[in-house]
Every structure is written in structure tokens, then in C-alpha cells.
Image 1 (cartoon, rainbow, N blue to C red):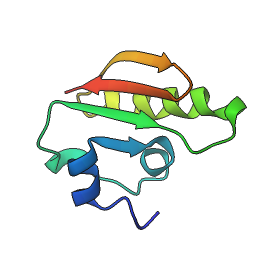
Image 2 (cartoon, helix red, strand yellow):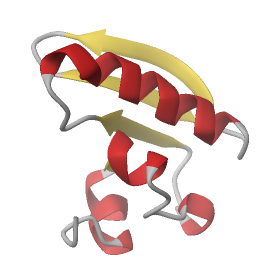
Image 3 (tube, rainbow, N blue to C red):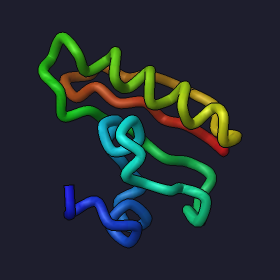
Image 4 (cartoon, rainbow, N blue to C red):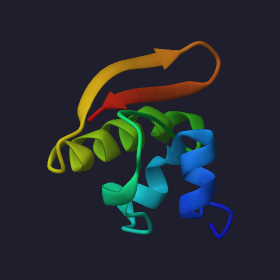
Length: 79
């Protein structure tokens, strides 16, 4: 996912679960307290990957605030 550059993540404040789970992003330099995670997986795997990515980020000081499923499943975390 070359489009998920650090600049893109900072501008959009969103990152894919897959990028987190595959170790393709480093959010230590991310300047904001809130970020959203979404998944590009098939519908049956989306929530599983989003929650797994949220658990990975918990080890780095992020806290899961909410998971929303209003047609577009995503999670919001706070550092």
C-alpha cells in the first residue's frame, strides 16, 4: 500500500488494519491524539482485523474508544 505514506496518514488521520498488522506503519511520529482504523478485508474479516490492529496499538499506548459499523466499519483510538 504505497499510498499509505506517513504524510497521507497524518493528513487523513486514518490507517488500515492491514498496514498495522503487517508492520508497514510506524505511528511513533504521528502528531495527533486520535486515529481511525479501517480494513480492506472481505466483510467477514473486517471487524476481526480492525480489533487485532487495535490490540497491536494498545502495546504502544493507544486506547480503543469506539467501533462503528454504520456501513463503513472502523475503530477510533486515542493516544
